Amino acid sequence: MRRLGITVPFAGVPLADHRRWFADALAAGYTDAWSGEVNGTDGFTPLALAAAWEPDLRLGIAIAPAFTRGPALLAQTVAALAEAAPARFAFGLGTSSEVIVEQWNGIAFDRPYERVRDTLAFLRLALSGEKVTADFGTFSVRGFRLSRPVSAPPPLYLAALRPGMLRLAGREADGVILNWLSADDVGRSLAEVRAGTRTQAAGDTFEVVARIFVVPEPDPAVARALARRMVAAYLTVPAYAAFHRWLGRTGLLQGMWDSWRAGDRKAALGAIPDEVVDALVVHGDPDDCRAHVARYVERGVTLPVLTVVTAERDLHEAVLALGG
Image (tube, rainbow, N blue to C red):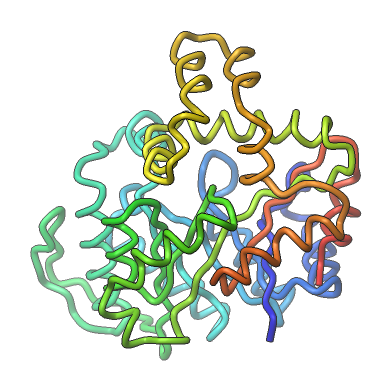
């Protein structure tokens, strides 16, 4: 079955009004609803509503940070949603960023790779129902056991950008979550994932999720103006800047980085080449957008998850037009 995900919650729509949107998305051909966690809703509440309102939707979170909940609380939260949506919830774990973890939550953003590795190992044990007493390296747990263990633990996916984390995903996770890359970049990322022995053993069961930003505006000038702001907002974050240097875009993006560092936001936006915008942000009419998303699938993505952003079009109409 071909799968297609949509990012929730929908911008500007109160959570209490999402029931109709979930139903409409399912009817339009979306199979999955995926949330995230930045500075809007938490990642779990929208999915709990979807679990109750639309039992045919598959659910996922991409991602919850490894730092901002204690290990036991994170296991409880994941288990609760897995219980609410049995066999149709996937949990995505990631490092998040220094801004979210340290500046907003007052938690030291130390050794992110190790923290994700250790949290993944802990969740495997805790979600299986075991009593956990162990020193994981970046944290210790003494005597924790879920009082409501899930009969079938959810798959655990890992958000990854560069080789170390991509290989960890291949080695230890049930899937990988890719973000802010072009369709042509997918192969390079998956080559690193496949270096993990677990991936080689798991074969077709390993999930490749890609978060894809979509601006369904037929006017290229309108679409690119909106897309440039999105590119600048993300690719000036150190982790994403390093990712795109690894992908080979240093020459294309250096002007943006230099202007951004100098505090000239207008110049930074103007320095982003059209070829970067067109590669990283899907835009055009619905048919053009679907064709571009299909290129990700052709290159190995098993679940494209669309984040739809509009400038002049009605968001509800745009989301439905991009469905199956």
